[in-house]
Amino acid sequence: MATQLSVFARFSSSRFEPELTNYTPISSLRPHLRVLGRPYTSPHSLSAATVSFYGSEATLRRSRPRRVCRNLTFSPAASMVFSGNPVVSDLVATALSGGIALSLLRLWAETAKRGLFDQKLNRKLVHVSIGLAFMLCWPLFSSGRQGAVLAALIPGINIIKMLLLGLGLWKDEATVKSMSRFGNHRELLKGPLYYASAITLACAIYWRTSPVAIASICNLCAGDGLADIVGRRFGSQKIPYNRNKSIAGSIAMAIAGFMASIGFMYYFALFGYVQESWEMALRFLIVSIATALVESHPLSTELDDNLTVPLTSVLVGSMVF
Image (cartoon, rainbow, N blue to C red):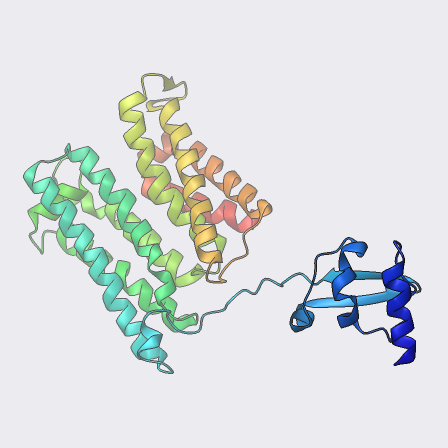
């Protein structure tokens, strides 16, 4: 005790740092921490700080809080009610996601029926919104294979619907008008069928922990959808090797696909599914540029953009990620 009091006396009478030992209590430095040039840390926060003594020098180091990535086992919404039952949780998530997708489809069917938008614009609004809204619902599901399969059932049902409508086995003129270019139900057997199949496979195979799924759906929905909308409005300058495509449309596709991919990268990072980084962002840019180039090629026009764009995203994404 006498030793500690003598240390305090020398410390208070000097303008310089005192000679401290490893046995000097940190609480005794409380009135004089301004001499050390360090902010005051109360004894109650010692769990977040480390005090190190090196000879006659005292330094106060704050340990940085570590970032923790959460791995969600159950859906953040349904698990509050059905804790410990992932099957019921995933069924609730399936019902919610399916209801959202169905509501959007009915909304665009009504706008097409009432003629609120041009038919081609209405079709592209369906193209952009359905896949992205569906991917926003992915955190509702559990992290295992069960969650991926149940989530994939939602666009998978649309595959059956496109087949029934395209073959004429089911009549729904509003849906046909909202998804086709010229109102012919046979058109649903190509672009809309490829669209639903691409989203279903991306969900079931890659799921939300893979940037390939993000790139595939974002370039298909946001990229390809905005390319047509912007190209029709500002596409006076055509691409030399394909007069059916415009430079403005291709640039818009690359930018929209890339920005949507970045947005979902940060969105899924909030739940701990992916780790956002500049390297991942650069790879998303590479995939978006590649899909825009393929979409502008005449072969893509002959086949279908809804087929070539997701295939390119998967192939290039598998190489860069």
